[in-house]
Amino acid sequence: MRRRRYQIEFVLKFWPLTHMAKRLGGFTPFKQMAGLLISEKALNGSYIPVSQDIEVPPGVVAPKEIIRDYIERASHRTLVYQCPCRAAESCKNHPRELGCIMLGDGAKNIDPELGRPATAEEALDHMEKAIDSGLYPMVGHVLFDGLAFGAKPYDRLVTVCFCCDCCCIARSEMRGLLTAYPRSVVRLEGVSMEVGADCKGCGACVPVCPIENMTLVDGIATIGERCIGCSACVTACPRDNIKVVIEPGARMQEDLRRRIEAHATIE
Image (cartoon, rainbow, N blue to C red; front, side):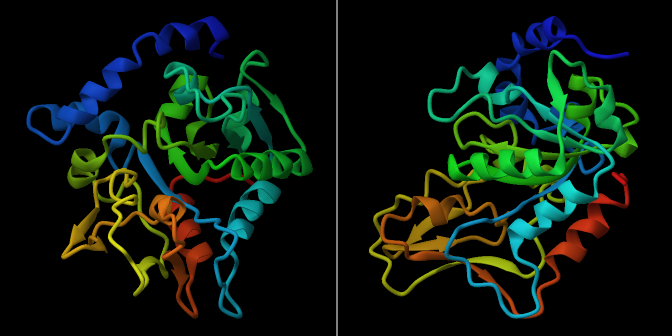
C-alpha cells in the first residue's frame, strides 16, 4: 500500500522522538528499540566523500562515480520532493526540496505526491545540485525509507540520501548509536581523513563530527578510530588542513557493492 502525503506529514509530527531515541539508544533496555531503525539490519550505508580537491590514485574509481554507477544501473529512479529530515526540523540552512533519490523496483511504488520518476540524467543533475548545496551523499539500504515511503519490495530499494549536519537523522547525536551498532554506517574501504602538519588547533572541526570522533590533543586536531568517512571535518576546516585521502588500489566501489547488494538489488 502506498504512503500518502498526509501520512508522512503525520509521522513527521513525532520526529522529536528520534532525538530521544538516539540519546538513549546506546543503553539497555533502549538499545533494542533503537535497533529497529539503526541496527545493521535496518541501516547499511556509507557516506561518499565528494570534496572537489580529492586526489584519486590511478586505477581507482572516483567517489562521485560510485553514485553515478548506482543511478545509471537502477531499473527505476524516484526523486523525493523533499527531505523528510529537513522538513521535520524546518531546516533553515539547506534546501528542503533536495530530497533522496530512491533506486530500484521498490521505488516504483512511491506515491506521486511524494516523488516523481526520473531519468538517469535528471537524477544525476539532482545529485550535482545537492552536492553543490553542501549536502553529504550517503548510499544505503535503509528500512526507515521503505517504511516511511511505502516502497516495496524492500529488497529492491537502495537510497541515495543527501544529508545535512543540522537535521539528518543519521548525522546528529549518533555517538551512542554507532557505538552500539558500529556496522550501520561504515567508512568506505581505502578512505581516510588526515590532519595536516599545519593544524593550528582552532577546533572548528570538533563540533561538526556527527559521532564526536574529533578532539584536540595538545592543541592539534585528532581523528579517533571510529571515523565514518563523512568528510564533515574537511569541510569545516578554515585552513583546508584536513584532507580526504584515498589509498592506491582502494576498492571503494567493490566494498560498497558487497555490503549493500548482499541485501538489495536495484537492476
